Length: 331
Image 1 (tube, helix red, strand yellow):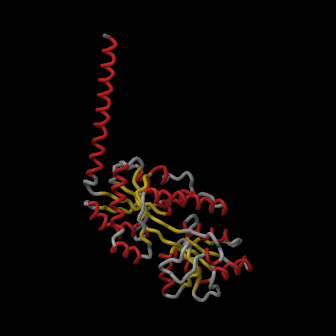
Image 2 (cartoon, one colour):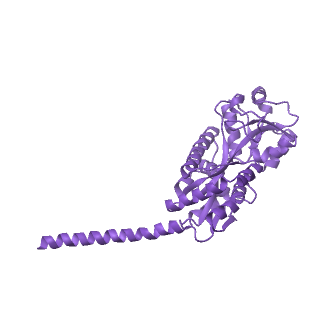
Image 3 (cartoon, helix red, strand yellow):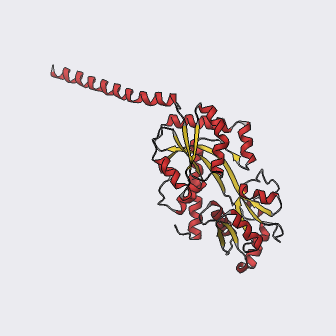
């Protein structure tokens, strides 16, 4: 009798446990199905007007239509994207606070392994939104017209040749350092505070060639102040179709680019991530938004959470290698 009672009791406990588990899962399933039911905030951890900010605002109307809720964009700049990222890291993982991540998050992680936030550890990727390449360029009356010209001049007169970029540890700076390393050069890369300072350095002759994003330099290239030598992509860039790649110009295997995409706090429900990914991809895929990206010299990019995770995982590895080779010290 006691044996029968024990079996019955165990079955009763098991039944209650399974019922409790099912009940605990119901709110999550219902939440994901109803998501979103209120406005969603997107933190852009960089100043207004930059590539990451522009990408969100370009897609904002289409995303709001697809989501059926307002999208509130807030700029929280500081510490190369760390301040805004920290705020999202600490937010409730419910899909209502998102982060517009970008290349500075990977370069910062590479330069500072002990950074406050880590994209791989602290966030759940939703998907990429846009990419843009870099361009190696000189002033309009420079004698250097090809990558070969630049390399030969740098090797012939290393004491009189300087490359330029914006601040140490940025994607532009690391891309320039990668070029110097892969081309076998022994010349300095002079870091400047702004892109405008880089342009001034070229015009004054304190630097002889520089690396910048195509969106950041194309205005001066198109109006004839600067001459594009090569682009960093694996194929010719659609915005500078007559400019060869660095790889095809004598530095095989050279490739760098910049990107931005959307992430959520770690532990955000997978169903919410999947819904956000589908809706954002749908918005970016529309012809109007695609053209608006291209108007800002950015290549619109759709993809899966895994695509974005691969992008920034590979990015960190590339930048860390460059940092090691260039012996850049964390600051």
